[in-house]
Amino acid sequence: MPFTLATWNINSVRLRAALVQQLMTEEAPDVLCLQECKSPLELMPLEGFATLGYTHVVARGQKGYNGVAILSKLPIEDMGDKDFASLGHARHVAGRLENGVVIHNFYVPAGGDKPDRTVNEKFGQKLDYLTEMRDWFHAERPEKAILVGDLNIAPREDDVWDHKKLLKIVSHTPIEVDHLSAVQEAGNWVDITRQDIPQGKLYSWWSYRSPDWDAADKGRRLDHIWATSDISASAHSSRVLRAVRGWEQPSDHAPVLATFDL
Image (cartoon, rainbow, N blue to C red):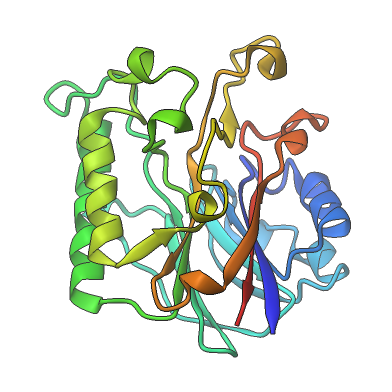
């Protein structure tokens, strides 16, 4: 049975609950994974989402920061979470659909401003987080799984507006790209978005700092949908909903969608 999955860094689920409901109404993905919810679980506006059919929730909340949630029309079993790099942050949660597919929802640390762990603790935490992801997937060898989320890295040259200018900017530095590649290889993950859209510039994030983000178009593809190689061929119809970045009081991220026939 086909199902459509969406991932979106919402940048406060309480502040932007109406936008989440708008996406649910207009696009109606079967599963919606949110990152940076910035809310404890008990304060997330889940009742409003349930009225639109999203009655199944697997989530981890945190007051004011981080937070990840899987909102589903389909029954889903809570498969736990991992505290990579021992940060004590709500950055990962996993759930299993009735068809056996395990969904991992990640919010990888942004890494601060300077790409040097000797002067920027947050950058070191990001690299450590990715290293522990790599080691976990190497040990567990996931099967029939989908990984989504704000991974805070734009790996390809055409995932950023200017490759050369961003080589020393956090999210596109070679060391981050290498770490993300190691995670991908360890889990035998396939980049579904680029499987379906293999060529051309593609972004999912545009900074709030740009007065006219759409015209300037200085974006980065930070949000990803991956699948293990045993199910990657069943994926199709990937999209980045760029127009959502232009909604009223938006997140600085746009939703990314993919459909799977499983």
